[in-house]
Length: 121
Image 1 (cartoon, rainbow, N blue to C red):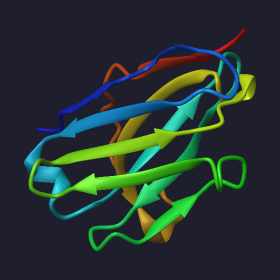
Image 2: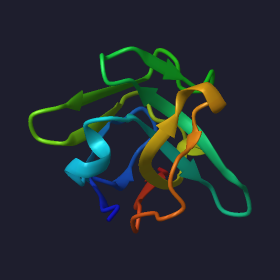
Image 3: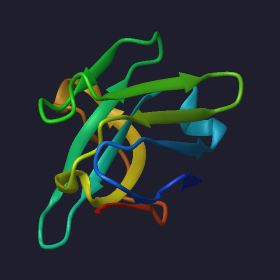
């Protein structure tokens, strides 16, 4: 059973920082790359950042140099440190296992509730 629980979102001013957390069920975490995705109002879900089981990372161009993804394999946790936030980062953020060889597309159709990030002054 796939279980994904995201947390850490909130309202932040432009230029601010947030750290998102994702708790994933052990059955999917240990064997999969993991990724953060986001969906802004009126737009489709897009890849933000991904990390493989051995720590290799991949970032969307729009967040390179500002966001950092990491994982704690002992705790089945994935994190997204977001710095220098911009209004265009406003979205609901989700985590999921990722299919690296399929352009980091999400592996599972079951999603958590996501966590809302709003960047506004």
